[in-house]
Structure formats: structure tokens, C-alpha cells
Length: 262
Ligand SMILES: [Zn+2]
Image: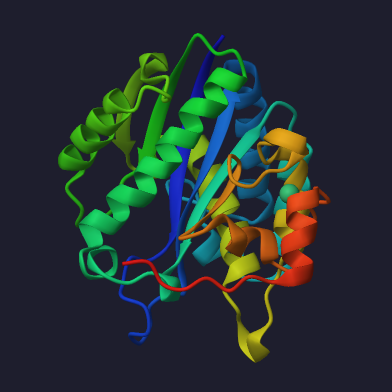
């Protein structure tokens, strides 16, 4: 079986604390077989029609899913697609310091590397013979050095099954309907982590699709399917994290604020 991964980012790479920057920067990877991709595309077409997205316009969380009802409807629709595996990676920016936050390219590359690694492991876990990995194109970012960096890092790390890769590319958002799905899954992550008015978050969407998030040991998605940086404890400690494993339970009870990494 050959798989396909579509990866989109959420949040921006701007320095923590600066005006208009996001508190998190993360990526959502949607992993599907050919058959699951067809089901996913059908749902994206349905959502585009339902939300009246004009032909030739890319449906996005930012422009077309501004209301709770649309967000929940999209989450319900995507949650029902069989054979979808989601891998999330995010960084809580106020917990890191040093060159990662000052060098946006390095920051992007690091988050992309962790996402890529987890996607490769997910592909192996799904018994794939190969995987095509497509990152969303980011304006103003030169992807060639990132591609070389990811391939070099994957080759150096013997634990990463880089031989599964069948094509690592950066594609624009209008090329594949599946990239629009990745954008919406990224939106679910953002809504759950980025406080809006009154400091409230909306974890209900990510919880709706939570069964699609890749599980590791003990059925826990942290960190293989749901990775927080700089430490796994951030994800485990989230008050809405539904994982009932012993590690998440212990962290949620104790709480474990982490210092910045340098
Ligand atoms: Zn857990």
C-alpha cells in the first residue's frame, strides 16, 4: 500500500511576545491511502459546496470557517472519513528561546523535521510500502534547503525509515483537495491551543476528530501523533487532553511547567 501525507502549518513563525504573532506554530499531517484519499476528497467537495466556496478559491479555516457551526460541521464531516490518520506537531513559542525563535527558517525546519519524522513512523506503523509527502507551500520560504535538511536528517537518523519516501514536495494549496483538509485539521489544532476572546479555547473540534490522531504505546497519542515542543508534558497537561493513559493522567494531576530550552 502506498500512502500520501498532506501537511499544512498553523500559526506563524514570528517571535513570541511580538504583536500579532501566534502563541503556537504547528503542523497537521493528514495521512491517507488512495481509497481514503478519495473519501476525503468527497468530503472536502461537500464542505466547499456547503460553505459556498467559489470555484477556483481555496477553502481555508481562516476565510471560510469563522463560525462555531461551520467548524463543528467540518469536524463532524471529517471525523466520519474512514482510514484517515492525523499527526500533529506544535511548538509553544513562549517556552522556547535562543536561535529557534530568532531564525524563522531554522524554526520552520525543526518543526517540519519533527513532523516528517512522525509521518515516516506513522507510515511504517501502517505497513506502507511507500509514502508521498506533500508540504503546503509557504510564501517567502525557500523550500529547497528545507528539503535537503529533512532528507539529510532522516538519513542520519537510523530510526527514521526514510526509504519509504516516494517523493517529498512542497505544493501550493490549490493543487490537491487533500491540502485543504490539512488546513482544516490545522485549524482544529489552532482553535484548541490559541486562546480567543476571554481567553477561551475551542477544543471541541480536535476532540471530535481525536480518534483519527495516531496512537502510540498504551493508546496514547503523545508524542507520536500529538507532539508538543519543547516538551511532551505540554500536550499531556492540556486540560482538554482526553487521553486516559497513566502518563497523561499523572501529568494532568501534578502539572509540570517546563523551563525554556536554549
Ligand atoms: Zn496519554
